[in-house]
Length: 459
Image 1 (spheres, rainbow, N blue to C red):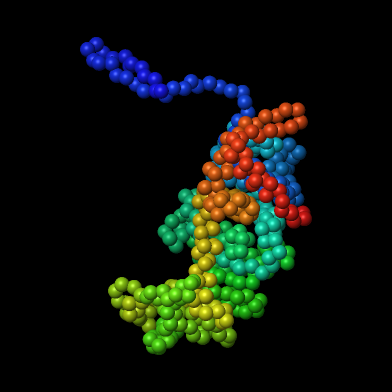
Image 2: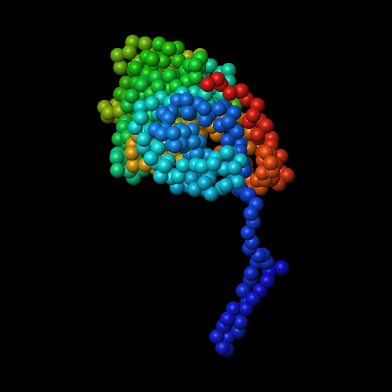
């Protein structure tokens, strides 16, 4: 029942009743946490011995009183998984004494210490090599026995009003990091943090080499998918030399336009969907093509899609990007050496990079704070972006082992379905008890049991 009371009122006015909820506020000395589910990601870090790996490869503190590198990085990872993307958000962990007791975190760095560490380590050459070595263990744990992988690379815009930020081609100030993903596990294999005015086509072959060197021992790039920024002679030649299967969005050129003009209606076949049925208003064809002065041909799969209105095909105009319009159709092309595949298979396989790379980049930025850069120093922000990528990779690894009803959700959902569990922490003698509601205890116990079962790669 809701209690009511009367407000004071001037003479002559009727008293007004105010509704008050029936409760009393009180305090307790019990050790409580609202984040008991963070034990899940803490167990992942423990299972792969993340702390030992970080301390092995990252530069040690300058004095015996300083925090180990693992303390800084694991604090940032916990903060990002908890949903805090600004350095000041570390206070949520610091104030949660019950959670710190469970995780054995006697002290954690303050926001100012985190910022100082990022600036110091960001300008240390060893840090970025160290990140690669640590990340290899996470990738190896996720890939298991998989050797040949599909590499998706893409540039992404990070808008940031920083002093050293440059204007991007999208007319925003910020940065343009290049990100490489392994399609089979959805994890980041490498990042190249770049200024905003860097062209997406700049040094793409060098970045492919970086991704190849960042793979665990014994793994290799078997297939490559990249947008039109990768439509370069040296990348196609590299793929041919390494026997890498590729699908690259081709840039339109006068030669491609002339080939399209020469096609007749009989050259086009309906595009088939994944179930084998025709897609209304879309057709495909293929032809041999050469790029620049490279003497080896590849297959060009042309896709056309009907659009509203008409557009003339101008053969004497400069390159217009990834598509051209003519006769009521928009035309796009994919360069590939997958000659044994049908046109539809190649198109669907290329389009899958949107799920395997572009959507994963969105999760990295939106769910793990990859687009919220904390420092004014370029290298410090580059290191923070890499730590966000490591945090994302650990989540992707954990997601492989979660129960089916949770495994396919994004971090935003996992936070309130798993991480945000209220619990009471009780310490008796040498034992530590985490008391939850029965349904929460069952879920968390199932998750933790699964996360303890996989073998950690050797350090």
